[in-house]
Length: 409
Ligand SMILES: Cc1ncc(COP(=O)(O)O)c(C=O)c1O
Image (cartoon, rainbow, N blue to C red; front, side, top):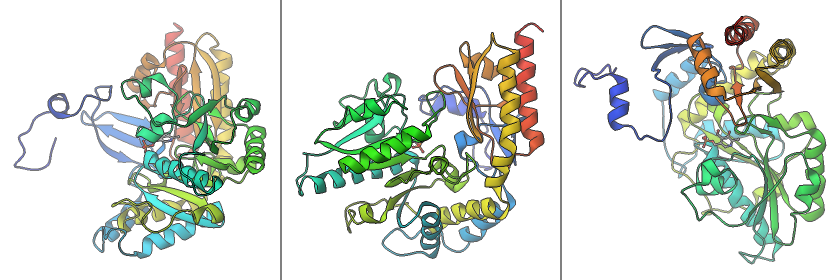
């Protein structure tokens, strides 16, 4: 319901039915308030939120430091465009370069927009390889099962019928190897290839981490063939796996990174980091976006980084994950008829069921736990980085309860 007195009081469900585009299938749930790992609906129902806005609410809901930073900045300066500098953007770039290594950062507004920037980078690199000629070397090799966003570039890099159907023709120049099968990627490389672009952990098609051997192997291939290695860390980055970037676990060094989601802790912001040499490919006028890196968005992201660092949240994720994972994996042992697998890293976990996870997620919701679905019969668990051991344990308890009731126990 709106708080504005001039607005006719119609139920939120009616307003959605009448006026909101029907591009999402949603449960009948209207959320009105959040605090930490918990959200409340308009009926007073309370839920443990392990959706976290699909890996966005890195600090949980309404973290006091985040709220104070955003409120302060909103009263000082919100938006100036990229025609001018603002202090927060410079400082945020410095901090992100600190995590990724020498290079430069471009700010945008979403994961898809970050990935568009990476795909444009690949084109620039390809043109350089081809002696300045466009349209000769432009191929990007991605992975089957990938998800890179809903824009034309992102969608073209996402070889899934349910994403692409209805929107063809797509952007040309994409080829797809099997994730964790280096030979399948190598076989696709030719003179037209400019880059390899994968998620470090595939989030939307069932939670599939790229292995260390695979990532290191891709690095070797990219060096050998002068290709950019570009990693999509939109979902798995910004601390979700216990390292700031998920690729750090493998000790691999990418040439470019896309990030978003957790970076703003709920405020829309995306970014790309590009290593020193490739960063020079972007010259004035070649790329831009009106809202990228506003003082307000950057204040939100700086608040996320402040709390991650001050409260040592990467250590907390690393410390708390093993017991939580073990308890979740025990569910696969205790309920083999229902749970096929539990996998993932840190606070990006997929629970693979033996049947459609949608009714299961509905039962979890009834029992007070919100989770997002993924592909291949998987539902995900995406706690905020601030989740307590008690909250992690509670998630297992709720899942166990639903498994038990469905087993007829
Ligand atoms: C790995 C990955 N890349 C890109 C995107 C697209 O991000 P956005 O929805 O912010 O455009 C997502 C969103 O789920 C994602 O998980």
